[in-house]
Length: 408
Image (cartoon, rainbow, N blue to C red; front, side, top):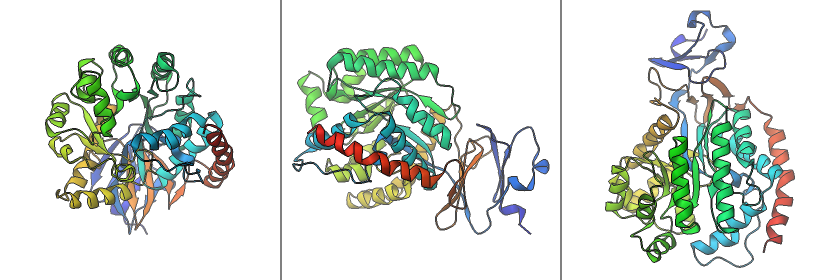
């Protein structure tokens, strides 16, 4: 007989139900009381550890097919801009609705199986703009992950027209979306790919819709140098002076911000997101100044949403740069707070009144509850056919790589 102190009790599928923790027991409450719950709504957690779900505070779901044989560039990139131009900007231009859907479903499924309940995504697909956020949102909704989506408006392919289309896609999605676990915000790719006019328009759209901006900031020195050529102290100051950063906005990376700039971001109520695997892989540096803010979360920047791996790399990098190991816990905790702000909180995991996003780990993630719904049980995805998702991804990857090659 199961010990009730190690049992997770689930109510009917509802978003935003409340959790109450008593010893090792979590109950998700709704119209039914816990004593009325049927046995098939009781999940044996004995032998496992009840844990908060994981948050990926900055990623690119569109990279979901990348691990399936994405071809290397014909010429090895020599710097960060060449990495973008020869790899990632070709990938995003090659995306269409079918390949994006296949990659999104694979990325989301693998995130859930890794114990990640929330993705804060930053999307680009310049040749498939209108409706692209719905493709991502449907994958998230279908599989049951919590998500925050935006289109990263840019001028790097078609100038101001392209930027307006990206911002309009953000507007359309924010206004039309009705999916309970999905939110929309406004996005810009990075300030070095847009004009001042586009930045102003992004800020105006944030104010009009009562939302925030998600943007790459100071990932590489190139972003800083571009802002300085335009007459600003840096990309952060440029975005602030053009009134594009409402409190709560999300700045990815911040590698080349100094401590004063990080404190300025904190004073303005902004979030920063550190992406250790990506920063190390792209050789852009380590963001030592981020310790000046208490609003720094952990993201993967398109790497798989295995947050235990991201945290392990952060621990390695932090130790190599003389930072305290407590930085990992700080980044993880900040991610829960960020999600609480974006979804109207609170997101204090395993506390009364918190969002019902919890997991059970038994050596590896074994169960996951998102928004009060059981989506992974005994390490198996309940909300989709994983083999079918994988098969479709493998079918769609080769044509995507051919389109990438044609862009060379």
